[in-house]
Amino acid sequence: MDQRDLSTTSSPMGVVVVLDAAADPAGYWGEVSLGTCAIDIWIADAAQLRKGYGTVMIENAIDRCFHVHSAHTILIDPLAENEGAISFYPHLGFDVIGPRTFGADECLFLELRRPDSGCD
Image 1 (tube, rainbow, N blue to C red):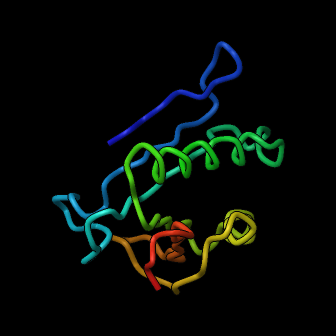
Image 2: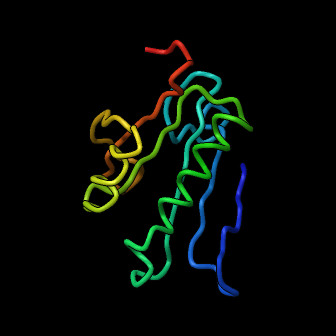
């Protein structure tokens, strides 16, 4: 797991977690191939939304997945009710896979494939 503080102030405003989805012992992400990362991102204060912080956080996480962790695929699972996130991720190249239930949460499952990965 790769967790980084990308704060621009003295107080953290959110967290982004990059993890190896294939190595998840709980199997949360289902059966995925080696080289699949997952990203979780939270911005704690709603007043900080739509200011570009999430974009910086997710772009940094995508870069780390592809260039540090050598991933070919990135998964993300915003809550189905999070319309802002669901409309945001496709602008970064994520494709909607479909709805999934993770525990008690209804989510929308999205993936981003590295352009040169050869995965279709």
